[in-house]
Image 1 (cartoon, rainbow, N blue to C red):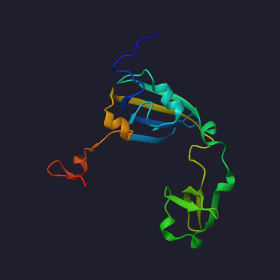
Image 2 (image 1 turned 120 degrees about the horizontal axis):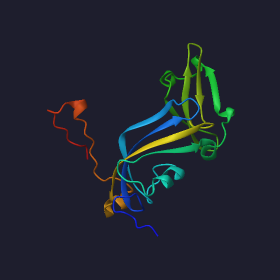
Image 3 (image 1 turned 60 degrees about the horizontal axis):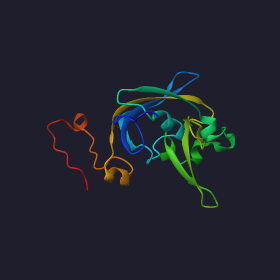
Image 4 (image 1 turned 30 degrees about the horizontal axis):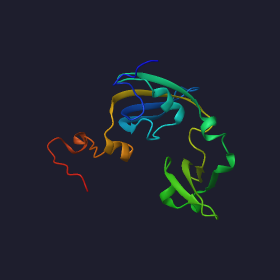
Length: 179
């Protein structure tokens, strides 16, 4: 049996990584996470289970590609969830492609829709997950692997993480977190 190294991803390890989601057919980058996400392996469900399973045993500096058939995760596209309406029937604040709209049906169930198209005559929203019907590659780069603290395990991720925003506000500015 292989012994687990202290720096390998395993249950209870704090992991930080970045990733890209790449469409297998077009090779277009669909999503890119530039700022590292942190999670506790085996505790937090930060990524799809198929992706998390492939991370086990990896170490800092590893870059892995995980192919995912999104039909298995999200099911096939449901065209009845694509709605196009005349632009005058849609409030102006929803006239922005990429905007997420939370809608409620008559039974009180919520569903998120994404504005996918706006032109001079109509607005189209889509309730399908944007990855529906696609085969993608998750390209992940592991940046940090260490033992998680008890506090991080309880919280399910980083505690009191403060982003470096000096590039935005300037390095000569003092930034105090809102508590």
